[in-house]
Image (cartoon, rainbow, N blue to C red; front, side, top):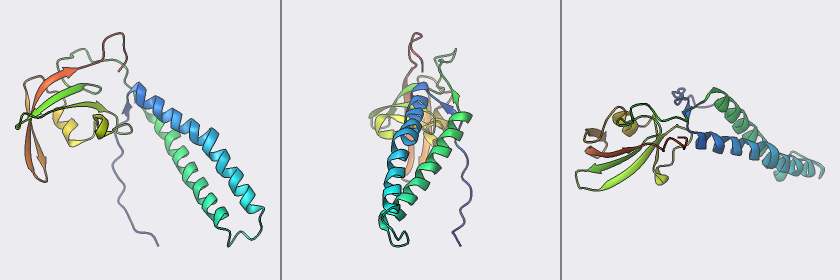
Length: 171
């Protein structure tokens, strides 16, 4: 019997056009390239005989299950997503898709972009709209301070800059 895990709260259903493109590329790669390769390998391993002790066959079947699980997830997720490709009317406030420059109390500056939960990458400066930092930043403007509770203590950031892509670019 497996270990029970409480269901996690589903992430927000918003995504940037770039994030949607990445997910569609991953889905296409898994379905059109990776899955046929693994299927061929499993077929060749099955032809070798006894499947119960054939590690290549067992591993290949496991890979196919993982690929199929990810493909199902991506299809369902892309179906439910809302692509946000326009900047908000009030670009002085922080909303989805904004690039935000923050300064902490040590005068260290960082820049983040608020993106969907399926496309975040902190090392690239992309933070999920569901993250505590994003939630604290929403509806703030230049000059506002936010207080973020972290395990190491409270961190105070000041909003230095809010930017959106230009009108001829999409979010």
